[in-house]
Image: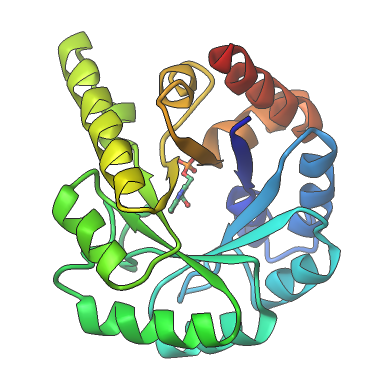
Amino acid sequence: MIRLGVNIDHVATVRQARRAHDPDPVAAATLALLGGADGITVHLREDRRHIQDRDVRLLRQTVAGRLNLEMSVAGDIVAIACEVKPDEATLVPERRQELTTEGGLDVVANQQAVAQAMDHLRKAGVEVSLFVDPDQRQIEMAKLLGAHAVEIQTARYAEATTRSDRAAQLQLLRESADFARQHGLHVHMGHGLDYGNVADVARLPGVEELNIGFSIVARAVLVGLERAVREMKDAIRIAGK
Ligand code: PXP
């Protein structure tokens, strides 16, 4: 069964809109786990636009499932991760102007910075996953750098507007997952996945974990988080049958 990591950044986005105490992502994590999440994912961004340091520290103490910290390779963020020790760190690119993470980390172009961050994290006992495009060069480099897993970005698949483009993007994801597995990497996927497009991705052989945030939190505003997570778990489970 594929693991579902629920990204709760956007619970914190609502809280930060008023710099208030509620809604608390720590409470959201508990509800997501009750709904069947296998893990909790948060992105501690350098600009702290949603998740705060306090959230990460409290989540480390309270989340019974896996805690996956999405992060850039910036030194101060790496230092926090080494101290908090999430189960897994997913290295992502980060630009201040972006609405959300745009594209995978270019591990080929940023080899040195990525290697350095990975070295610190591994010494702290944190598994490292690299968020990359469905591109064999990037996956090969992730393996060379000693990553535990790759999270293959699904944004272009999710954003495809024609059937043929969607099929082509899905095929690229399939080939990338095969390639990563042949290189001994664990395969995660995420970005832009929702209740309608998750099934085809969940059926790809070898995918072990999906990280999904926006669509779940958006539905949770209307139906509650526990139910929104359960419905996503069901969509993944049904696809796997
Ligand atoms: N995986 C990674 C690496 C991400 O950066 C994000 C967005 O924070 C997600 C998954 C979740 O994407 P979405 O919110 O579109 O489901």
